[in-house]
Image (cartoon, rainbow, N blue to C red; front, side, top):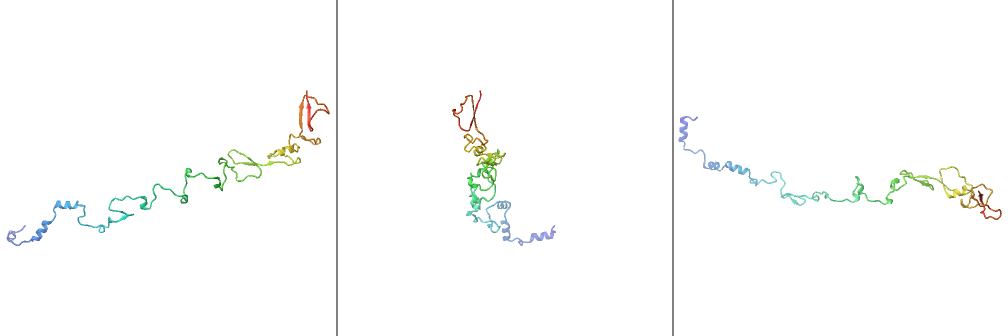
Length: 217
């Protein structure tokens, strides 16, 4: 508290302790309403630049598109492929193709492996030369040798081999075929045999040479 004498001295003091300039400066201070208005002002009233705050300037561009507004980038703008695009066969170096994407191939394209029976092949890597092919359902085809005698003296032994007509006729000891006549009566062989109820007259009835004729009642 000021003492009576000090208070009286202050009241009697005619010296101005606040200058007019100071008073003007104080009076120029913004009040609460002005301060709130300033805070809500987003028009950069202080003129702060992008460089001052480390921001990207609006003159900057991305692939020729300015950043002064919202930018819509296409795949080509960033070096990406379009959503719908295709590749040449030479671009495919790995991965698994769906079966529907594999085109039909000509047989000449198959240069290795063994084609199974179900795909029209034999299922066998090799086949015996000159042998007959024997099917085995869906299993691999097998082979069987073919017996082809070329003379009546060739043996016909028990075998799993298939026989030709040549082999049969030579087995019957005939030179032209099973049904042909052979007049070599001293050689044991299969002969043509006929049977009938008609009697033959020796020396006059006609009968093919080499044929055995039986008469029954």
